[in-house]
Image (cartoon, rainbow, N blue to C red; front, side, top):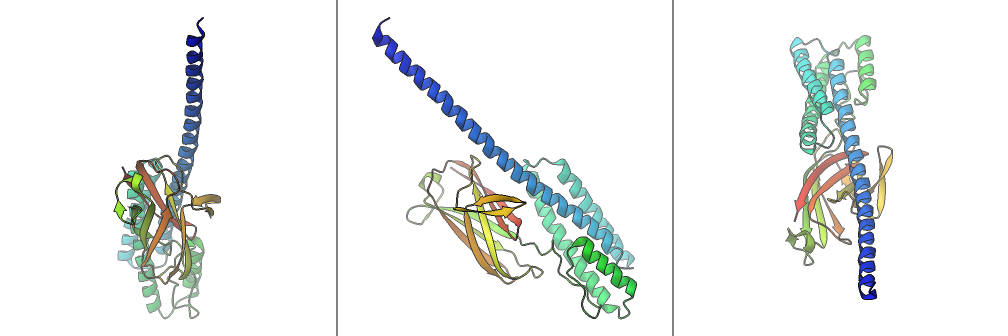
Length: 290
C-alpha cells in the first residue's frame, strides 16, 4: 500500500478515537452534574413537604386552644387547603420547576396565614385572666409539638409569638446582572466580567436578629456551580457556594448585594441562583442569558 495514503488514514483514525473518548468523558460529567441538581431539587421538595405537614398539624393543635366556633371553622378551612397543597406537592416531580415555584409561593402564604392566627389566638388568650392549669398544659404541648412557639410568659398570660418555621428568612426581589469590563450592565454572557446578585431579606419580626451569613450558589446551564472557594453545610451535606456575605439583620427588610468575578468560561443558557441562610434555602430564581 502507498505510504502516502496509509499515514493520513492512521491520523484520521487517531483523531476519531480521541473525539469519541472526549465525548464520553463530557457526557459522564454532565450526567454527574444533572444528578447533583436532581438531588438538591429532591431535598428542597422534601423540606417543603415537611413544612406543609407541620402547618397542617399546627392547625389541628390550634383548634384545641380556643372555643370560638367561627375561628375554628376558619382554621379547618385553612387546614384543608394546606393538606390539599401538600398532596399536590407530593404528586409533582421535583424537576417541574414551574409547579415547584408555584407551591413555594403558596407555602410562603401559608406561613403568613398561620402566623396571623398564632398572634390572634395569643391575643384572645391574654384577655382571659383566669388561665387554668389545663390551658397551660395544652399550650406547653403545642409549643413542643410544633417547635415554633418559644415559650410562655412568666405570668402564664401570654403565649410566645416566636414560631420556628414562621421565623425562617425569605429572600425576595432576586436579580442577576452581568457586568462588562467597564462595570456596565450587559445582556451578552460572553462579555461578562463580573456577576452581580441583588436581593432583599424580607422583614420578619419573629426572626432572630444579629449577624447572618448568607450563601449564594450560581449553577450554570451545564449543572456546575460557579466556585467561590468554599462550602457550607446543608441537609447533612457539604455544598460549594459562589459568594458569601455576613450581614446584620434587625428584623427589618435588608438589601444584600454580592459579586462574583468571572474566572472561567460562561456559556449561554439558564442559570439558577439559590440563596441559603440559617441552614435553609430562603430563595431561588432562574435567569436565561445569550
